[in-house]
Structure formats: C-alpha cells, structure tokens
Image 1 (cartoon, helix red, strand yellow):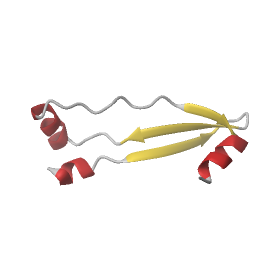
Image 2 (image 1 turned 30 degrees about the horizontal axis):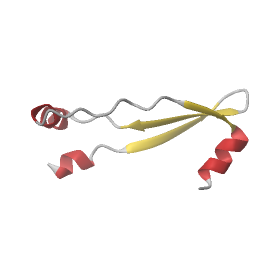
Image 3 (image 1 turned 90 degrees about the vertical axis):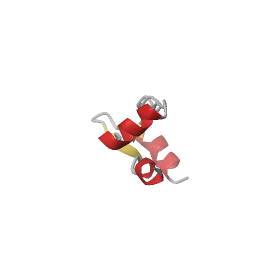
Image 4 (image 1 turned 90 degrees about the horizontal axis):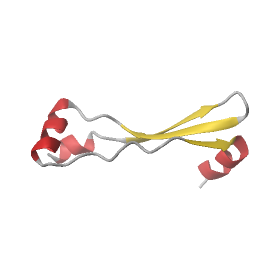
Length: 66
C-alpha cells in the first residue's frame, strides 16, 4: 500500500513569460489506476491542485534560493 502512495509525487514547474515574469505551477502527479481504486476503497480523495502563481523574475530567483 505504501509503495502505491509513494508513487504520487509533488513537482514544481516554472515557466518564464514573455513579459519577464515567471509562472509557478505546483502539481502532484496523477495516481495510477490501482492507487485510484485504493483511494476509493479507503474513501480518501487527493486535494485539489494548487492554483498557479505568477511572480516577477527577480522575486522568483530569491524564492528559489531558499
């Protein structure tokens, strides 16, 4: 069971925009069908994907250094 849950990962995707800002998307990977079934049996749901964030490039550089 723990191996199935360990397959879900949280990732950060950074996309530069044409106006010098940066779009930050924090996402978790979609569960495989076996994990989806396990979640249904346990009556659990994954949280909603967080909303995207957009920052200036300088602010994004400072945040990433921490």
